[in-house]
Image (tube, rainbow, N blue to C red; front, side, top):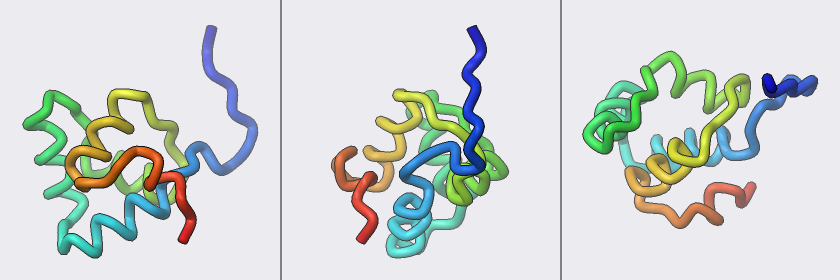
Length: 80
């Protein structure tokens, strides 16, 4: 069954991912490359869409982002 999300906001963590990535002086391409070393393939364009909340995220991608950004998963959901 396909996932149907009618909202324009497709994830809750995009803004926090962008904030943490910038704080770590990491480009979207660098984040993509680090995820690839974990066998998690998210291209630079998809990183951009995650950050602008126009792309959904799988649980394995959420885990990888948490690991690469050295941040507990629950912190990704904090808006501050």
